[in-house]
Image (tube, rainbow over all chains, first blue to last red; front, side, top):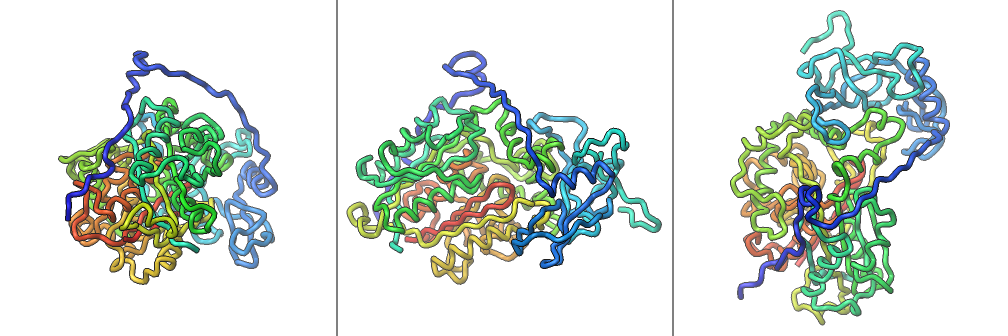
Length: 179
Length: 386
């Protein structure tokens, strides 16, 4: 077989670095958008947030799928019918996965890691829960399958937000298994 | 439905920041694909543009902004966007333009400029999170991958070093790629395991870089293809599936939506035994564990088996199932939609025997490419065959 040319035959483009911009070695222009949003939240998330303010986690039950859904929604994406009733859940759950983050939201490095993960809420369908922080534990104690409980902000400080829960802490119980 | 062939590919240099504008990069990639196919702008019936979030470029209606660089002015044109899945979804859209009979020749261009966003493209990712449930927690996108990786590792008892082997393989494979951003012939598993901890279990060298770049492909109908080549490379199958946005209501250890997309593509390609009938794969690898996760989603092995195949060398370029022979996103770079260059252009070049130093031995006949995106929910799959 005749030797064929290798593709891509060439790699067009000119690499420039951030330094080239800082030192004004290349022409550039700049734009800083100023925009704000306010979202109306609809019946499901409005009730969820109001109940968080009351110190409660609530879900919606789909009687067709026999599924207690949290975070709640007014329709079920599986059977595509309306969900049927509100259910008050416990504020305890299980760590389904987690990370120990040395990055903040803008990818800046931080010294004290953020403990973050997904908690499935007791009383809801398997694996149904939400993302939140963990606290009152050492990073090395955090593990998948760990039982945790919500630590709430004092009632006066709650504002109807996911952050009305400060974080989830280890659930203390008699005879509990320690890692 | 008509059969559709690929007759040309192109891609620019991939770098953290390129001097050229998005339009210019689109032009350079398109021009290269047109040169390989031996066609001019007048020969192109329709154009598909793939580009991911507008927030990176800071130009909304980016699809319109990129028209002039995509040989699309005055032609039917559409921009498609399925997050990180765009790199394979854009060529799927190119395929259906031709398969449906509405176009004989379609150009697909994929463009991304992440370097424009300050202080880091991460900042733009802030706007993809749920405003009620997630944003008040100030999440970083790496958290998502870290949580998925942890779930996958824990479920199967996978060691980090077996995942690090993917980063080593892909960065070494990229050495033969002229566009590569992070090729490294000397990288070792220890380098990956000793790299900076970002969000456990994700370390710096587990991650592909943000990049600027563009890529392009030309699709041609079976009726016209003999004008251009005697050895067409055919689109044998396509599949795509999206799962619910409620990612905290799903088990992240297995990408079922990728499996559903793969089954759709394999059915079209009449593939019944993927590991036997597929010669090589380009699964989406923005993180090293994602290659393994996606090999399993693509049904190329059993659940939890991909790290073992990797350890045994099966996925090396000279192994039984070469995986990411391009160097992937980990080695060549990750300009989101433009990774079509590794995931689909590479299939075309490999199957044509044109991949040069990256060429897989043994005359490969069937390759699968895949991309993945949105919030761990979108799977896009394409099978090319000689």
